[in-house]
Length: 563
Image (cartoon, rainbow, N blue to C red; front, side, top):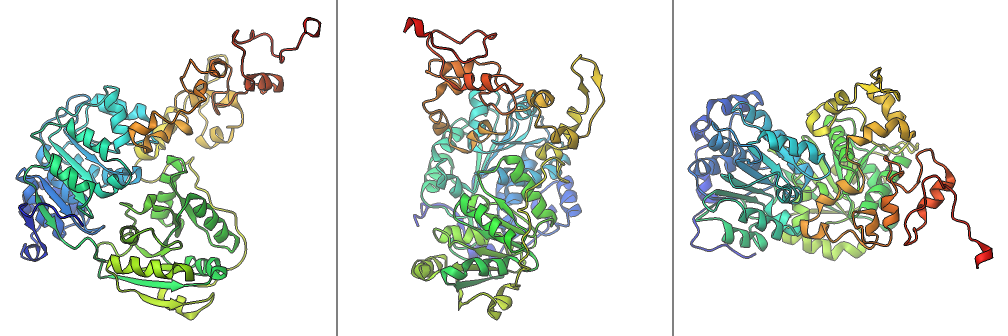
């Protein structure tokens, strides 16, 4: 690992041990924050919080390195709110930004800070892709003190002139190493370059090497480093097991482990693999939810919400959830597919054994994966027990509480996105959206009776009945997922069929100009009543002479006399 400049001031493990674990009031936090923490049952700070909060309150640039689940969110959030309290933000000019790599982590950080920020009259807003940009712009225009953002969406709003960083006093990078791993280093550098040079910068990460080291050298001034644990250490309350299975037994062993009591997270390498494992579990009677980047944001939010509330006990996911997702009482993490490297192993495993709780991490290893998995375990610094098992083996019950599933097939579980989560309606888009569409008008323009959300959603098969709903809300298809990618790549993703997406010089401009296209699905049906002839005509490329008259719904006929 590339080490930082040895001249940098650093608080090491030994120095941290000398820090007295005082309460939050003794660290210099205001009474409203201390009272808010007490209401949540938080009375004593974690070591990273005891170490970092005084330095941040003093205005120092800080590097924080600690294991996942070590309390980094409050370590930067509490002093940031304290420093900017007392002055309202101007429209479109926030006073603090928190950059995170994923939407889920942004929502989690905002959920942790927002209740505490209300005690100081501070406003917190998430700015992420996959959610309504209109609502984010509306909030920025009203004024927001703290913006929790992913780099892609924040860059879009800055380019549109809806967000200025000229008044930023504190910039925070959370999970900085993961942002760099995802290719966001140029975007993050561009964002930090637009903040005032004399502003305070805080960087929290599990590792401080590679591109993270470049960010430190470019943007932090005389930073002090709080490094609680080596980057390769694992939590002491976490048990590790390498479980060797035959290829033919892997599905059955996975099902037995997933059928255990308690919350369980299964990690799979690909999106297709997630969907496959969820179906395999359903065939034997195990109910599981699948989470990956191919799902819409409202589905991802719903699945995580149902998992947090205990409505589903098994979550199957890709590495999209390996960083920053905090769910209480996850007692076991199962690597159905071994992780790519030791960093991924530690971050996946960090979903369990959080905040002093105990947990287990199991990795299924096929014979051809044994050597690479052993090397990964050594690099991760873990001491794992090794087992060779078959389905029904008592060892699985001992180390994981595995049980044979019922074997009765059940439907594949899908989240019900129509009802709001019990959490914040602003994030889930639930209660607020329902109220906005409560009043409807009939086709003659007269006010109609308010209908419940269930009946509206069930009528989605009729384009005419859903036209008003889709006019006020952005499509949940292709447009919402673009912001997951770095900004410089999104502009290149339009491809050759520019006629579908704003390229009016393309050969397919006739398809773009067809204003009779169905508003709900964006297909080329040509007529909202579903006329098959119009649909056929709408799918054919138009000639260079322009579109046919609206009254002519038939495919053009060839004049044989003139041939």
